[in-house]
Length: 364
Image 1 (cartoon, one colour):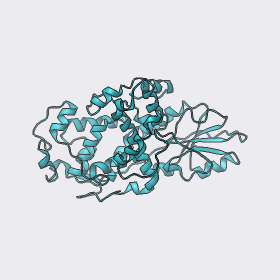
Image 2 (image 1 turned 120 degrees about the horizontal axis):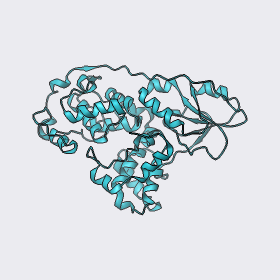
Image 3 (image 1 turned 90 degrees about the horizontal axis):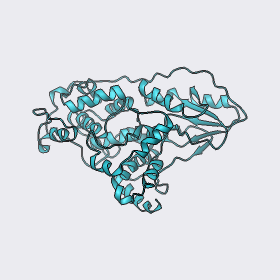
Image 4 (image 1 turned 45 degrees about the vertical axis):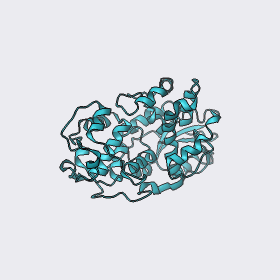
């Protein structure tokens, strides 16, 4: 479903139809790009994708919807940079009501009785993918009907996603739960049937929007449980380093094939156990990362903490790319590619961020 060879990934960019994307992206068979895993892992940048699509002759106003969705990714990253660990908590206001800090058992076991949602959760476990509209359905069911606090279910989804990105995931869940938005997100059975091509009737979601916001917790969603999520990191041979060369450090969020190709260096993929203790991901996601890393010539993998790696590199200069999760790195930090390099900092809403970005669309 998700190729890992660099040339095949680049081919996916050429297949983007931004017009059909805008028209159909909410449907489960819509013309979505499926590039999110590559953006999250840093093998592609939002700027690279935007430039590639615009180079085909589209004017920005023609593909406004597509550009906005790409820019959401940058927006969430800017919020993470500005607000740091605060995104782990209710950011704007408290989620209410909350009956537990667990996750509904029916969601974990894909037995909610809503066919489209159960099938999407089963697909997530099997492939590491879930359509974005289905993610909103699941989050709405969990936070606003089961009344689970968003954080544990968000960590569960992040764990299984190949495109695991804590900012996009956590802030999207908060948006649905009303902790990072002005209102909660609900979807009823009619909406789900429309976009998922199902024909279910008589479910607990087969009600009007006036009813859904005040309904009691459905019986199927009342049972909840705690989660134990753990990442299992494989073992690798000891590093063989050329102490005369600098070291370029790659990680979970940076697998950019072209990043350091302009100078000779020791290429090292750093997998820190402490990072995965805080942000655990599945074996499937780790395998995906390791497969993507093979695109980087002569890369070696080091499982351990940055300070330990730094001691092993001796006096070699260290290079790395900026990211909120590696502020403890020491060395030369390289900036990431943003669609709008001129727009930085915290904006309280995507709308305010996008209005600022629009001023720079002429640069494309």
